[in-house]
Length: 145
Image (cartoon, rainbow, N blue to C red; front, side):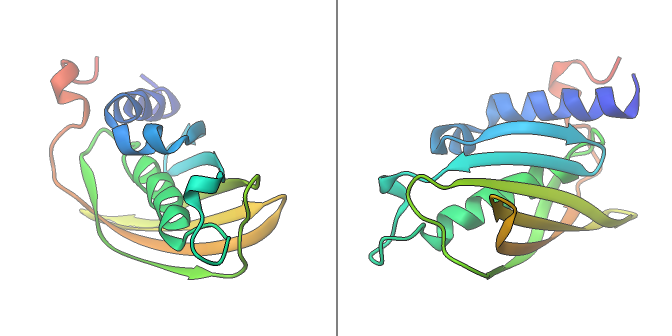
């Protein structure tokens, strides 16, 4: 299995089991080793009292892209920390794109940057720190063949 095929298999497994992201209306557009791109269209239920996208919704999108990017190696990997900077608001009808890219992965630790954009304009910048648990993600499906 090539690295891209492995990343795709890991993403398919995660997507099947990620009820929160699917329920939020996200779509997984692309995945590769250390990379993921997800999209989400903001609807009325995702807004706060100011009529803009709730920061928690934007964080959820960025965090999900981070999760998919850091789980592309068939090693169960979780967040050990993350932060986000909101650069500009998003509104109902906006299609947000979150692109996660691996910055560094050493031993069991990793750092990933996620940029959330709307029509190419940056809405938020997220940095996630990951920790691998040292067990296969695809283990419950018989492991990697």
